[in-house]
Length: 342
Image (cartoon, rainbow, N blue to C red; front, side, top):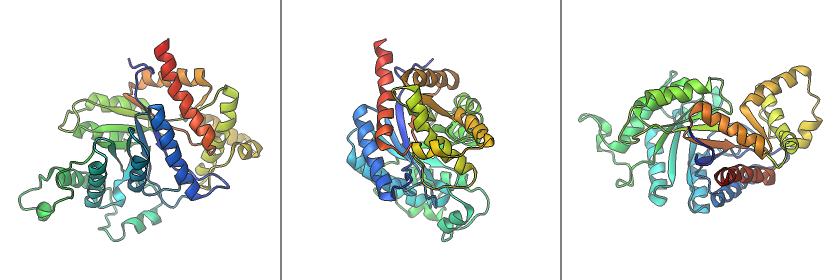
């Protein structure tokens, strides 16, 4: 059974815009956070793709990944993820081959099945591509992998196209998911899998354990590697962590109502006039947010490792206070050193 002392720890950051803040501040905050966790020894730093959301500053994970790679020295950087339905697979292959050429063995290509936005914005993203009203994720994934291997059928019109730089392979591919579909597909094709427990409705044990049970070794990956993404707010005391997590509670409550405004401060969350129904929703949603001081967080992380058999934990801390966010990641990483010393 994996122990917190030796499990890889990674970071997912969505460049959330703080209430009263700006998009540029959010983007620079992501770069600042990446530099911070790089020095702490985290294994990966992933950025996401969302569109038409006032609370999220970046819809371009490939651009952000390049900036983060340039700003850091050792941490792996990748997309968590590129929403493949929005993009021509050839374009994805080109951009991530360029990143891999510039920063060899430091890039991850995480792929998502959802568009990461509403239907109208999704249509605008794809309107100059062939619009398929159905789910064409699998077709796009197969095409992306063929751009990497070049193993097209002899009569395929794309066979003569070369993806530059031609002497660079795509970085490791990961499938992201919040349901069982991506878990089964990742196992079938033999790639890494990352489960978004921080917002998923699907049972985390079903997704994580079915991936491991069904994994088929491939040229890309010899053994299963499952990342569990968790929302964590850690502070020196349980009480301060609860205060900071008020931002998460109110933001989730607003999103459930279709309100995607920037992320509120802890002060604004504490002053909000919650109804009893609101408080019930927040208590239920807290099942997906690990909040507390170091002891409580360490216990919670180990519990997730014991039950899900995760190979790696990816932490997202969606609070607007950058200093408190950086401190949270410092405290979580310190838990490993404490566990080793014990």
